[in-house]
Figure 1 (cartoon, rainbow, N blue to C red):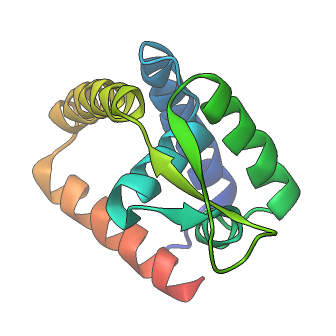
Figure 2: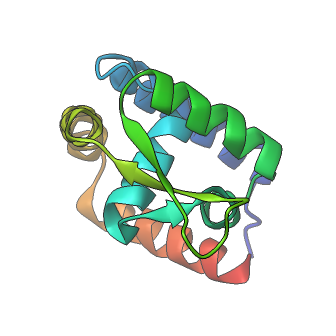
Length: 136
C-alpha cells in the first residue's frame, strides 16, 4: 500500500496558495481578506468574535484584519444595540465589488490548474479535500 507523502502534499498546497494570493492581489486582497469577505457575504452582519471563530484565528488577528478592511472601505461597523461592547460588521458595496473581482481571479486560477490535470485526479483531489476538512 502506497503512503501519502504529506510533506510533498503540503508543498503542493503552498504552490496553490501562492497562485491564489497572486490572483487576489488584482482585487487588492490577500487570502485572509478574501475568506473574511466571503464569510461576511454569506452570513450578512456578524460580530468580530463570530468572524474570528469562522476563520479559526484569534480575536486579535481578526481585529487587525477587520480594521484593514474597514480602512479600505470593504467593511463597515454597525452598533450592536444588545451589547454596547461589541459591534456588527457588514460588507459594503465596495467590499462586494472587490469580492466579486477576487472570485473571478480565483476562478481563472482554478480553471488553469484544472485544465492541466486529468478529470479523475481533480475528482480525487476534491474528495481528499472534503475528507481532510471533515477530520479537522
